[in-house]
Image (cartoon, rainbow, N blue to C red; front, side, top):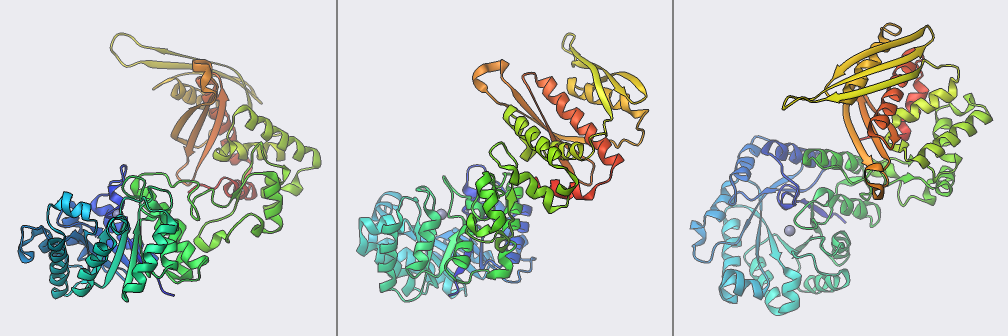
Length: 536
Ligand SMILES: [Zn+2]
């Protein structure tokens, strides 16, 4: 059965605490959602703020191939005639083919929030819907607090729906606005509404009880054919129902049609894209589309998925544009690492002892607090060193760094680095913005005569994590440094109880890797590493 998808990331989603989209962001996201095959895109509330008004004005120039742009608003104010209500007029002026309006269902809200009688509220609903229908709009009527209202006073809740449907509403959308309804109860109520109304019913759930997606799916099973939600589950308080999970479940588990199997394969990339614009990391454990959704770490699991992925995967990750990952860690059996090396023809290039040694080294490092899954550069170096044990570019003889600050002026750091290379000792002293920068410049100066071709790799991110925080400042720290050479980026990791030493280790690994890459081009290694440490 075809289930309509209604995305409200740009309206309800932006009510999430850390979400803010510019008008440009909103226009780009709307086009992405159109490409994904979403049926309705709720773009904002034109009557409530200038940004949303501007969005609808600029959206007039955007050609949507599939989606129907929808403007959101409320039933008219009690004191205004409908044709003079500014919020309703703004909805008409937004120029969208569809409008969604919410009205009150719960007698508590009618009395307390609006301060009008129950009958007056029915008039607001019916007049507003009728007015929008007269202006040629497809009207989605959002019955706000429907489930709470139904529990408090079922007859009145149903009368509000009747008012909307009699005035011509195209969709009656039942909203669990406070997100407090549990699935079984919600399903019973939806089924009851289904028995009484023939037209299209919709569902809009919030995640305050952590069952928003389950509620939306259960509602579909009880006869709803229009589902609202936000990509990545963004939204007010604990978020709206995650539309990406709803879509995947309806398509893959229940055999319904939403965006269709072909578009479904871009689900993960659209979720990542929207997270990027929201400036929030996509949660690794986000169902279907997160980086860890099909990641296997435990050795037993890895051994099994290598034989048959169905043993530990509920769907094929490719169906939603995700992929299987096999992680290396101290939990893993030898299978994980060998899996990646084998996949790229590298395992045969290591003898039995070299394989064992590599695995032991990785396990030991992870035990010490290295996190290799996030440090593909360090992992690549380990693999390269195992494959080319004779290739050793330099040893560090000593390093020293000092930071001096005088008065209120900026501090200055000076580092002295001495290394031993094939042709003898090299030493350099360098200054930098901070101790790590000075060490970085010093080490490169030491190597520049011997390896003039060494590329100027940029440091793009630097993260410090305390590993055993109960020891206070004596705690181990893990430093993760991200590097980039414009074509790609990679990270190296260092662990120590001294933040300078941890940074130095990550730096030396990064430089060794750079030299290895310059000396020995090895696509198979790079491919294996890229696969194992899959970034977004
Ligand atoms: Zn909502």
